[in-house]
Image (tube, rainbow, N blue to C red; front, side, top):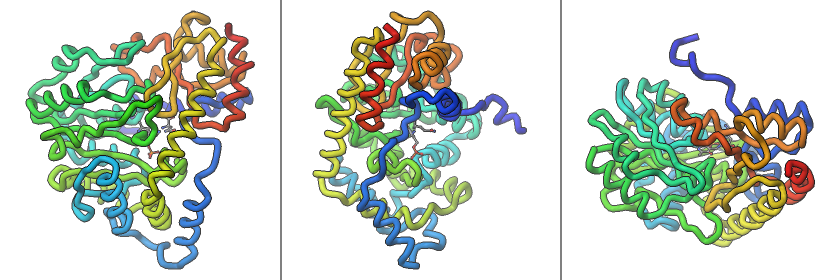
Length: 384
Ligand code: PMP
Ligand code: GLN
């Protein structure tokens, strides 16, 4: 294989799924709902496929109705004014959106600032683009960055900062103050922000999500990436999008043309329908996850693990050091094999230099049926 993939191992999600299956463990690892996409949204996909009109190549940047739906959604929730023709690209999930951003915006030798722990595809994407990641850790238990560490990460070679809010895996939703400092530094150093907002509708406990593109001076230097996978519980469809000022999006569009060209056509029709759901859909979605968060928190009570309520996403980071001595991967193996519950160890979400910062933590996911979340309680209680 090529040198550029030399350091890439099997993703942690695949590794843990295999182990969970082998030991028949309750899988609270991968962020993959164990319940179905809403039936009316699935019906739109079936209708689109059966119509005989949508089974050939879609336009490369995405079908017009979905590009318009993305722009309308950003106007409805964030007051953003997006050009549906030149300011939106439909991608094969956020994953392809993020890769196309890196390939289209980063030159070999450019530095990309990454907040740690990070979603596991960011660093391989930066490396494939020939960039150099520069890491800024979030510090537990509050998962906040040190403003001086952030400032020090910027250099004359910094080209991009990749942001993710609500944040996987910590459950943080970054505050206006935190985002303002990031924005100020990006403007001062002429840096582009790639904002991964796939959990945009998953805010919990009264927190609210603020897209960095809405801050003064930021729209023209931000590409925002999101996905239908989380908001419509349709992770298998892999329909995502990137939006922003046409001048910044142009690089992303160029890369997208020659990585994937066009995305699955019938699902785009269904996602265009889904994004136009009334506000009540989004409120009920959030309420469903508020209840699931409480169920998982109640199952963690009495396990000896300590945690903070997440402000967003469908993940909880729990500190296992009161009950286990070892690295997160060792604890995860113990939990799967001896207790029968799977979670995600965060080692692959850290650089070598900072992996010790997350050494006491594992991630549990609550995008699971209420029964599964309740079933975890007696199992986790055996840890204490
Ligand atoms: N970014 C983050 C932070 C995620 O958690 C995920 C989903 N696991 C993705 C990107 C990828 O999204 P998609 O499934 O739409 O490719
Ligand atoms: N985003 C999901 C998670 O963080 C899984 C994505 C994947 O399997 N690559 O759990």
